[in-house]
Amino acid sequence: MTVVRNTNGEKIVLLEEQEEIIEKARFCKLDGFAEELQYQFINPLQYKDSSYESRISGCLDSQISANKTAQFNAYFKKSHMPRKYYLSKYQDDPERNLNRKDIQYLKELNYINAGTNIIINGPTGTGKTALALATGMEAIKHGYPVMYYRMSDLIIILENKEAQPFARFRDSLKKYRILIIDDYGLEILSEQAVLRLNDIVDSRYGMGTIIITTQLKVQSLHTAIPKTCIVRDALLDRLFRPSDKAITLTGKSWRGDTHEFKGDNT
Image (cartoon, rainbow, N blue to C red; front, side, top):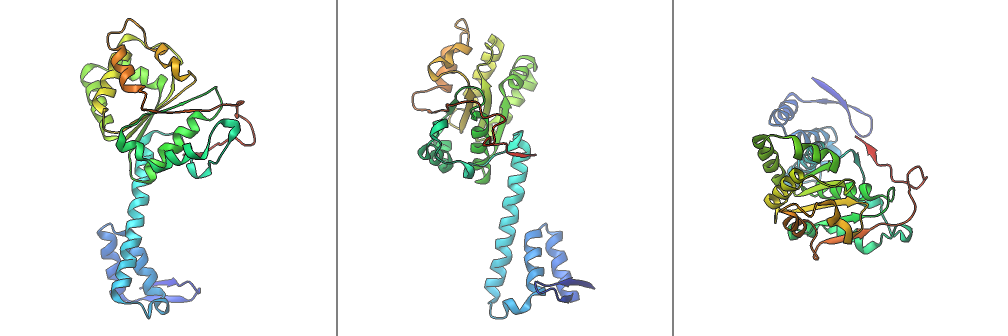
């Protein structure tokens, strides 16, 4: 026998048959369904005029919501994103050169199916990483898997993995509709790194979006790739195309400022 309280604070004893149905739902991993079903059982007056169909629909809606929450948490955990930022907190900001049109573009997510890459550039501390992460979070909210790497960490993988482990790593990135590469251009890439980065970009081509943050100006993005590398032009042609979206942030460093977007710790 289970004793619970309803929304009015009254003690309610669940019937054995009710407990059994709830447990069956939980056994089937339908926790959202079970939670809504229990709520209906302990608040019968709220549902006295509801049809059987509407009550079942309410249980299913609760399960759908629970599934979306579970998917969001799983996608975020796998994304390696260090913090949670949200596009809903962004608005027109002339000082950062961020406008409503760009924010809306990132929210609509049409760029993912179009395979458009996004370059977010600007001086240090202007919020490039935060905006990239907020864009990734928006995608995760809508069911798109995302992966995040700092360029320095990605370089270590590109330069040090053996052939077979690298091939598995490259193939694993295909399932992520957005790949975020943070702080591109802080160092000149080695030929090994360029070859393997080109391999990754080529294997993902047409499957989604790459978001790159960088301190380099758009016209200088090529300078991080040595002229001697044989796949230099191929990589540049896949990463930085005229059709890709560029957002240039400006202004002073926001680090330590009271208006800095700090995000939520994971």
